[in-house]
Image 1 (cartoon, rainbow, N blue to C red):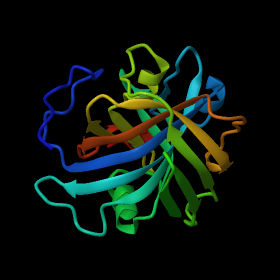
Image 2: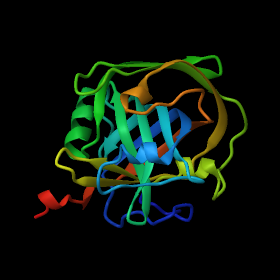
Image 3: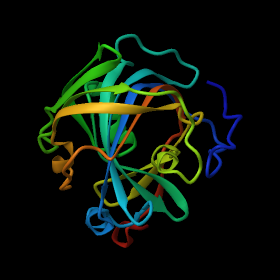
Image 4: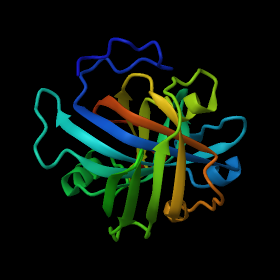
Length: 254
């Protein structure tokens, strides 16, 4: 993937330094619930401010297939670049920059888990996972097997139900999906920022039949009922920049 050319859809420009990783996110479900802002703020570490839509916080469970992971100028390494992943996320800002905070990321790829933990400080966990085509949709299952995280299971089926669309600015769909940086908190309290770039999300309305979901309980959130927003995306290609520290707690500042 070349350097970004079309950036008009972004809320802020991408970094000018070279990107380091490319990947593809495929057959993805955005399942979201709203939660009281006070409940979510209680879970945020210092250095992060909660981002809300119409006064409510939102949490997402996002299963998908990671594919084609490679370093800049290098081809993908066969057997290590395609694997299921599932994340639990909310929405925050650092300064004026909106982004995503991950409560957890579950995956099957041990090298990717180790690298993401060491380099980004992301809370990746090893899990037994599967994604398979099921009619017009996908059957997905994830069961965490990593002792570093609380037990967590997601099992269900999801499928697109309508035509492709690009979310309009100001809509909930745009606010939930058009995020171009992630934040991670290291064990010593530093906030690390990782920037990404991709085209606007090609979204479709979706349906989901969730048989079991304890991902939110494991994150410390009490959420009940079906998702309030369901969106599907077939594929989006992404480039990623090396992370950098954007906040240090006073006790660890140098």
